[in-house]
Image 1: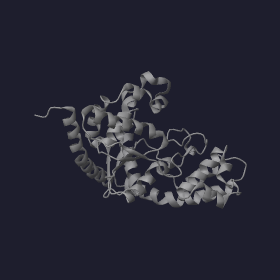
Image 2: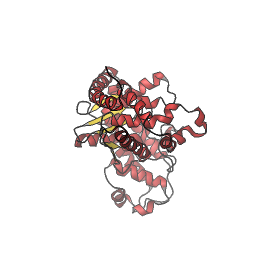
Image 3: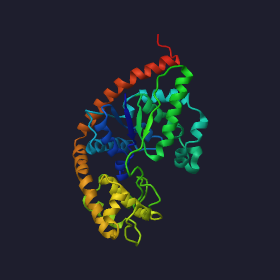
Length: 333
């Protein structure tokens, strides 16, 4: 059996990196596999402060983006994490299985906590254990991840192995990572050395999923480049991070390799290339943008999808959680 699980945080400002690095790949996996579970991980979101009204709005917005991009909530299970109690319940068990030394090695906590480590929430520190629970509470076998999540999936694998060994029960599979596509890491339009991020103060650093055609065009015209024309080979992108980023985005959105793209556009000026990229981006994102707007105008439809998905997710997760409880020795008179 192959079961796919993945999710994203509802923290607002969905952007091109979220689409190319994750959501688009999930749509493709859904076509290839009959057993896919996609989650809006709202419990992960509150590891740092979220305004409650913004969190509700962002949860609906992310759900709308999933559906608009092609996630079929009938074929796949689509829900928000807090609607399925088994996630948090299994995470507590994993808090008692994982080792502090393992969590101390998690680089994302160091990055997010920064100099305020002592003031960071306990949730931010242990959220890799919740991520492991998200995956293993469904016995998922494969997880599409970006490069920055590979370390957390390794932790999930370690937890699965340790739990099975500790309790002498082969309950959990050891999930495999799926890293897909040319653009698993989309960079800022203003700095090719920085990842495209919703937290960047400059809106011109990213293409938002809600941007219209004029906004996309304006942002790409202002995207940082260098004075040289585009190279004809991938080797020519070395030391040119902004050029590499735009070519990578073009390749990913057109389902081609960077080499194929450069064979076609090598030698042209960035002004011409940016117009081609604008046309391509609008043709791909335009229909998604329109469908997102339609869905967000009818939140009752989004809520119905989430309730139905949560019921289906609970039906899968609850028997697995009961297996865990029996293995651990929790008494059920």
